[in-house]
Structures are given as C-alpha cells and as structure tokens.
Figure (cartoon, rainbow, N blue to C red):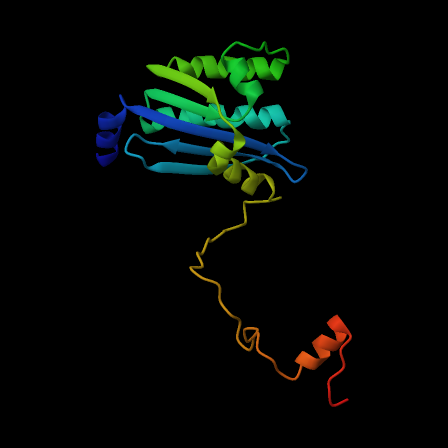
Length: 189
C-alpha cells in the first residue's frame, strides 16, 4: 500500500535516469541511477551474463533503466547518458545501421510510449560519475554470483599498531642523513 502511495504521488513529477555501460575483457555491465522526484536515488549495478560490444553495453542500461523507472512509477522521465552514439541515435540525429542497434532503438521507441514525456540528453562522463562507477564495478569482476561486497567507511586514517609517526627533530640518524645528502662528516669523526 505504501508503494502505491509513492507511485501515485510522484508519477506526474519528473524522474531522472542516469545510465552507463562498460565492456572489458573481464566482462560487461550496466550502471543505473534512478532519481525519484523526492530526491532519493535508486542505484543498480547489473552484470551481463553475455559478451557485449561497447555499443550494446551502452544501450542495455538505457533499456533496463527505462523499464525500471516505469515500473517504479515514473511517467515523466529525463534520461542522461555520456554515450554520444546512443543519444544521437535515440534522437534520430544519427542513423543506426547495425541490426542490433536497430533492435535496441525499437525497444526504446516502444518504451517511450509508456511515458507521458521522455527526453534523453548527452552529458560529460564526469557528470555521470555514479552510473559510470556502478558499471565499472560489475564489468571488472569476473563472477559476481558468489560475491557479497560490503562497503565500510573509514572516517580518518589510522596508524597501524607498532608504527610511530615520523618526527622531524634531530636524533641518531641525523649525522648519517647529512653525510648521505651533503657529504658532511660528524664533527667528532
């Protein structure tokens, strides 16, 4: 019941979708960030269980992200991608020639009809950092199925036990350092 209330209250407001894909020798994956009208981010890393080209890795998160946003309640969606090819092909500025790209565009055209408003904008990679990081996380791991990654935050640097901070005062090493750096022998030698 609470989920329906969220959907009903926010479906006419603008939702944001940031997507990025990554394809490496270790694998491929998607990073998706859906920002709800209330400002809450839903973040997803999706590992592809298939070999994806760079272009496929960029299209997959847009298709998946549009589906997820719609299922979550979005009706007005503003999508961001740093892939010039994907954005320009979705806008019909560039023509898709490969059959797989044409199929992706057809899926996106079908998904666009489920929204009252849909727009896609190309942004620089640095403005897509969250989605980029999420895609790189899963594409760099060979097998995610058996992994559980826990993230801990370290508020400050820790000095390991038994390690003392370096002091800058003079001690028994000072004459040795002066001899190495400056060629000066101690006065009593």
